[in-house]
Amino acid sequence: MGAKERVGGSFSVEKPLWRAVSAFRLLTVVYAAVSYAGIAGHFHDRVAGWVYLGVLGLWTFATVRPFSSHQRCNWYWLSTDLALCVLGILLTRAFDSGPGLVAGDPTIPTIRAAGAVLGFAVMGGWLPAAVAGLIVGLADIGEAGGLTRSDLHNIVLLLVAGIAIGYVIEVARASEQTLARALEIQAATRERERLARDIHDSVLQVLSMVQRRGAEVGGEAADLGRMAGEQEVALRTLVAEGLAPNPSYTAPAIRRGRGRDRGSEQPEAVQDLRSLIAPMAGARVTVSAPGTPVLLPGRTVTELGAAVSAALDNVRKHAGTGAQAWILVEDEPDQVMVSVRDDGPGFDSAARLGEAEREGRLGVSQSIQGRMRDLGGSADIFSAAGQGTEVELRVPRPRAGGGGANGKSDRSREGSST
Image 1: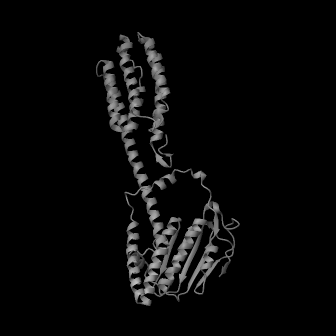
Image 2 (image 1 turned 45 degrees about the horizontal axis):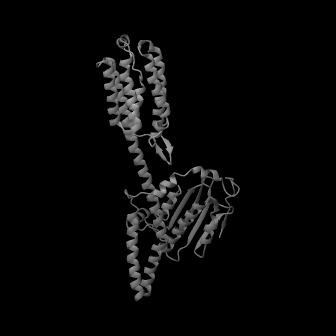
């Protein structure tokens, strides 16, 4: 029996356990019939015993489907199953002869009664299993006319097995809920990060530009710039606070998406990264890229291009409009690397980046590093005072994607400058 099974897009431990209970019921009812055939001579009413076993067997085989999953089974099915087993235990004393009782013959349902207890354990946990086990134990004591050493041994084993399985299923359910919650929070956090990047790349930059231009123009424009600056600060704070996972958040759309059949998804079209990077060249920006296409999935190309654009924005903002920038695209067999280097004044990268993130300035942490993290890649920032800044963006090449246009990993690295 597997520990986990994928059911409806989520992991479930219950379905394999229900299948095990269903199989246990079938096997034990067959065992009960074989066992009764061996001791039928001890019974003064053999036919009645066979009639009971026939009813129990028909019930067991007819309820295979209800006992195959939590959704189909309910307390009515479990209670009826338990009642039939208890009835068989009590009828054993009525049908058995005196010598059979003295010889310690097993009850007519034998270990089939344990299947009812296991059903209660999987359905409700350890407490219902303990109650069902006690009912079976009391029936055994009544059938034997008192508590015997053999009955005590069997009752203890039945209680231990039922309670243990019930406790395990309770822990498994709690773990399942925790895992589902963690996946929802992770998905919600990724969505907030994506929205934060979009806001930084559009709204926040516009507000920042309005603030600077308003201060330069003066007059009413200065008041407009001041208000734009206030809104920029408020929006940055809101975005930064919104990145913290919200434990009360639910994502039904995300859960529905996880339930889709992965085999039905269409492969993502590839694009040439150079077509997105080349237009960034200008009087102050030099682009160097391979002479052959750098093919990557469309989403990867879009996100990588947005990260490069964010890095250039930082060059213009912090190094000045007169700073020179160089973009280098390197196509390697297992990854693609894009570096953005400038000749600006540089800075203490560790201290500056940590301070910017605390103040809600998410240009690097989300627009650059966040994008690379979502793609399974990395973004490294190298800078020192007076030595400029370099941003290295790396994304892994999909295994099935091959190399480039011709799928070879040893293609030419000859660069071309734009």
